[in-house]
Every structure is written in structure tokens, then in C-alpha cells.
Image (tube, rainbow, N blue to C red; front, side, top):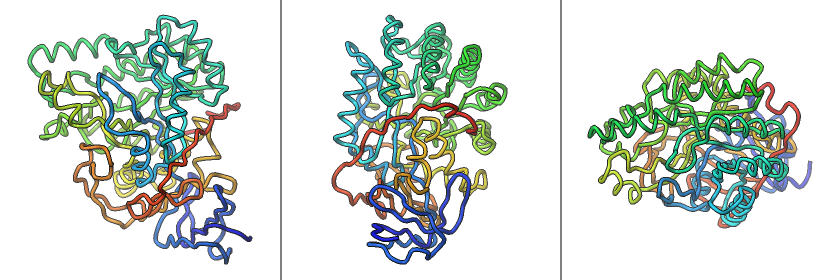
Length: 469
């Protein structure tokens, strides 16, 4: 084999179905060979991966770059956010496009595509969110064209009335049916709207507005009831759905009852796998106010069990880098009611899942790859271009040093000043991130100076959701 640009030598290559010593050859943007060690002798550059894992780049299924919400705007832009992603080993994101007023969702996706194409350091796709809920006929007519245009995943909220996002059950059913008819999948933010919103107001009205009371405002059953309702509607309509940012053990139990014969999936987030509601007792607890709230130890452990046994299928960060400037005034005025929900997280996926999962014997390395990369690529229609180390796939690769010690925190983000993980010490950290055959990050620093991210269309195909656990 001649004219190889890079040869990754000496590492342990991990895919969802194997872990073995192998060398990886890269030519241009593609992987051209995965071979036995020392089979290929020549390359323009040899990358020494001795003592390291060679992984497919993480695919973050849940980011909110540049998305205004609850009256706030994130501190960072696409460029800063995706540079942090690269350093942490995330090489692809699905960002949310929440429909703007006076624009069709199709138009809004086109605008976001142009913006991301100019700034992103990694490839991307989107989840579309309809907000013009009074004209459902127009929304339903848009779905086919959006999917044909390469965006096959959508999201709807079962809560957030004041933000104009809450969809009723009838319209939720209409949307999921039409999306499934066209081969796509619907993500659902599952929280009981009436109870979640009114209980939150009642607790705040009683004067309990400190961050430590936030979990009382949205107890487990607020999520669990909505998950059950969404599954029942989807089962009746034979629809494809997934639950975003799953936080409760009840949701894990529920999918066990519904999953057989259905294309139902759960996404969870690294923070629900790492922290409990005790985080709200910290001095900086106000910055950890998110929806759903952090939960109990039982929920954390059941989510890990779900990841191990296939009930929970993939990881998204729910990255949204609202800073102290956005959060402090609202909290001072009205406690948790005034805090924009969101924290950065696109950087930490592989490191946190490795530390909390692999190092604690909850999952093995192949399952880490499956839940951080391969399953997402399959569910959202970009496999095998992404999500696997194999000939013909894009060379989105992370060289991960399992022995490197680091401390996490907002220092890894250019434009963030809070973090779930502030001061958390980890063992295991990315040594190098390669995006489409280009070394973009090395030893914790960005070395690629110009963005090169592109929109990668989702390819809808028959049986694309089958066999994923």
C-alpha cells in the first residue's frame, strides 16, 4: 500500500464488536486499512499510539450551540464549542434547530447549516423542532422535504408552555406518525407539563427557591409519566422515537416493557451518570440547575445498568454553555425559577464515560464505543461513514491514553465559566483527535487553525433502527 498519509501504529483499536491490536492507515479523509501490526511499512507520517486505545470519535447527539432559551444566549459560538469538542474527542454533533418565529423549520435549518459550515471544526447534522404548533398542517407538510434534505431526526417538548414549546398529545401523535412514515425518528423531551410546571410554581411560591429545592419541583414521576405516555402513543402508531436526556430509573424500567418489537431508544447524559442531587447543596449548585434535575444514587446506578444491558442506547451531552452572567441575576431575583437551564458538556463525553463506566467495571471498551459513537451513527443515519474504524469510513479517530491524569473544569472551554465537572480528577484522557484525516487536537490543544466542518446528511434506509441496543 502506497501514498499513505498517516499510519496509526501500536494502539488497541476498539469498535463496537471488537478490541484488538491493529494499525490504522489513513489516506485523505478516509480510513483505507485496519491491519495486523506492522503489516504496512511506509507512510508519510507515523503516529505512535503505543499504550493507547484507538477509538471512533464520539458523536454527541444533543448539543445547543448558539441556541437562545429562557431569555438567555450561550456564551460561546460554534467555533469555540467545536474546538472544545475536538480536544475532548467528540468529532460529530447533532445540534438542535428550534424553529424561529416567522420562519419555516426548513428555512431555519438552512440558516443554521450556513452558520455551522462557516465556524464548525467538526461535521454536524441537526434535530429539527417545530414550534409553530398552531399550524400543524404546515408542519406535517414540511417533514418529507426536511428528511429528503438530510435531516431525519426531530424533537418535540411535552413541557415549556411559557416558551411556546409544549406540544399536546394529539399533535405529538400526528408529528411522530408523519416522521415515521418518512423513515425518520422523533426525540421527545418527556416531562408532564401540567404537574411539572405547576409544582415548580407552587414550590417557588412557598419560598423554597434555593437550588437545593430544584429536585422537588420535578420529581421522578414527572419524567416517568411522560415517558410512559410517549411510549404508549408511539406503540399505538408504530412510530420511531427516543427519549432525550433520560434521568430516572423508572424510564429505564419502562423501556424494558415497551422496547421489544418497537424502535424505541433512550439517550442519557454524562452528568446523570456522574452526579446526584447532592450537587445542588454545593456553593455553586445554582449553576447546576438543569431539566430534568440531577437525581438519586439509585437512578444513576440504574442508568449505568441500562447502558450495560442495552436499555439505554446512546449518550448526548445536552451541551448549552450559559455562563454566570446569564444565571446570577435570575437566581438572585427568583432562585431556581430564574436560572437558564444549561451547562457545557460536549468536551467530557469519552473521558467521563471511561472514568465512570470502564474504570468502575460498569461497561467494557466496546460498549463505550457503542454508546458514545456507533449506536448514534446507526440511529441517525450516518453509519458507516461515521461511528466505526473501518476501511471506507471517515477518519474521525481519537487516540485515548487510559493512564493520563487530568483535572476537568471550565478551563477546557474557551467561552465558559461554569462546569458540572469543576475540579474532578480523572485517569484517561484523549491524546490526539483526528477529524476527517486531519490532526485537529493534540495533547489538550487545538493545532488545526481553520474550521473544516461540513453538514453530513442522514441517509434514511429500511430497517435502519433494527438490532441496536
